[in-house]
Image (cartoon, rainbow, N blue to C red; front, side):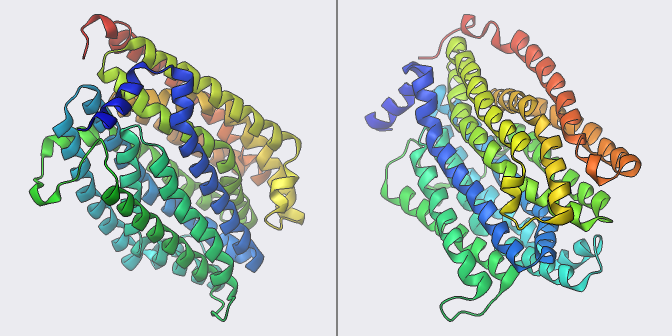
Length: 459
């Protein structure tokens, strides 16, 4: 590995934490904020078609989340393992991990391509017999799953680059796709420049074209620049120990994020007797991404930094990173909470919300935003679990929050008090999850972090 890359890795072990965390995080924060903008713009254009179109896309959002959860979860496992190997100066194993991740991306794509081909209609049959909503949803679902190879693979390549401390390249990769998508949405949805009006189908096509652009940019960057990890697929051999180590972190993350998506599928089923509530929940998911995407971007910078210093047995730098990430997350989240509480009508108006949708949407945004601050603590501690190779702790916290908390509470509140009060299930469940996250972190600290720098050092 070249001197330049050795110096980049050494930064994670010596440079002051506040400056280093911000320098590693801002590209991810920017790219994920742009991604949140894309989500809002995409749904905004769909809402201009009709409320039926917005409802149809809202039904598909959980499936997209599961797909991204599989890709991101696998990428998180790859990120954590590569960063730990680099911290321990095991460079060849870091390379093998990066190569293995590409094979896993192909398998992940095959899963969702099969879902799009065989299960799109049965899935939508669970929710609605409305022909318009059904048709829109099936078209959208098939396109975004069958052509998901580019999305899944480019996410993997982003995570590989992030694990080395390179946050600029992933930002460029992500931005290229998002900007392409934003530009193509109105053209394909409404049929500008002589193209046919494709409505919801056009939104899906714009999405996959944007993902393809991101993948092309990712491959170009990998081919034309030197990096701290190298791909040599001609000599690649499957190493089951590497796959095992990847999924020790990735599987809990995948299950955790997939559980959230499955919970959203069930939540939509609970609300399906009130279609406007499904649309409101879908809109909320788009709007709140503006609050949480910067926090997730911050955690993308914190994860390799904590993992590297955990591998290098540097307790102080690891804990300083965690404290700083919690502080910045709380600042971001507090601003978002204030907006949702004081002016919820403003973001809702972007989606042409009127009448019943506006009334229910205002209540939903105010109720759900009460969960933002405890969520910030849970997200930060979860990143620590991933960085130390204990993603299962994050899974436990998520299961308690989502399965034990959100769904039962949503069902009870909907059936006893109606859709207007259903959304209190989120803050109540998030509070429960935060308590368990703090307990699990205390256990991890006392068993593995407390005496980390007393066991030995890694040059």
